[in-house]
Image 1 (spheres, one colour):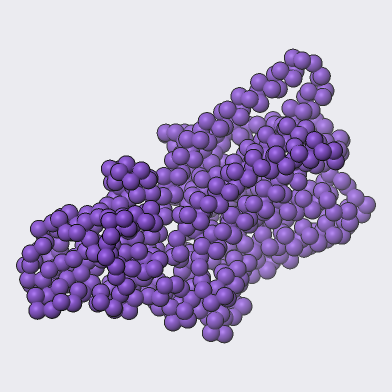
Image 2 (cartoon, one colour; image 1 turned 30 degrees about the vertical axis):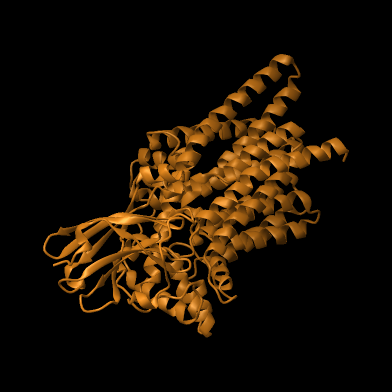
Length: 585
């Protein structure tokens, strides 16, 4: 490799590292150390693993439709250090994307494209893989399994292009396909998209025997996977009798979800982008079919067709299993992680076909047409991508703010009744599961900081609300019916650059100097003037509200309001601008 070409490869990676590092920073910045949703289903496994009571049946058991054996093992291992920090699992999602991008780079290098074409394709693909449109999964610990099947597929495609031994290719692909299968339900697609691709293109000696062996391995994996399998009763029927149009809309919106939130109406944008990608993919497929006997060309394009089929297959499975919820369900952020690989495939296929057209018609006019078409497609992608990234960043901040409130609710769950807040933020519908699991994890010292066990503020870490550290106040305390008060105000942790995780409401009886906590804030709202004042959009959700039962404190009691930093944890008393400065009756 000459020096100029080496410098070119280094420059490609230097530019690509910018969105990769930025994406990593955002995940770490907005990730919150609190289990949410499916994470709490892993907590009992972690507790049992630490007490020596975990069985293989519990690891093999279904989690919704999937056999999530590998994610369960990773969850258990993540707590073996003695501290279960779910942010480590969020970073595993990022690491998976880094490795996937590296694998994509290897595939691009072996595709025969020019240095400039590889650079443009790789930069666009890196932007796609690290898209903020996946915000729902980026800061969700249980989101990391969604990134693994694509990583395993890319690793298998790289192995097929680099390993020499057919037996070694078989074993590598079989292990990766099995790992993919026992990660998520759509991971089973790997059995059709890895080693069979090699057999189709290369046709090695005794290929029929290898195919029979592969089919046998896949059948064994499927038999194990579906052993004792039951359809979750709380999910809609599989392949319900819905109109074909509803299936089509779901399918296309799923494939176009990566840009759905760029402009309104979201469903129309997603449908258009999904249809456009699918059309380009099918055009490339038709072109490749005409050159079915050109083994060299097929070897270069089949990895990208496999990646596109991964997204298309995932869209088909999702439509069959979720169309009962309506086509708009396909716009969920968590599906973007599966759909973006059609975008990745189209980017590479357009470049490869453009090169083939120029080589077969080496005229200035053909080069001009290819260049203009490529530029139009790039601009048509980057403009909505930029808008979608800005909107997704907004959603990312909102999700992080919700998780901050969830962290506070878990922190106070043993001292106060925070079940309503837990249902809103951490685990809808069943707060008791969270309360019990958090207490069990706390007894094993697996979560930090430890849960607060008393509602007496004197036993909790406190600090004076210095102006350079904390700002905020309670602005109103209003009666709601005969049984409740509703307090509201704003609170920010200026030093940390974010709103307070929650606000604790406490009372002081006329005959005592002790402050007793009775509730925490249960909701937050946007307050644009605070974000503008602090010049920090992370402060946007600084307004808080709290519901206080009248019977939670005696007549004549005084109320106080305390901003909470749940990471330390520490309380800061806020000023009170409401009429609650006097005794409440």
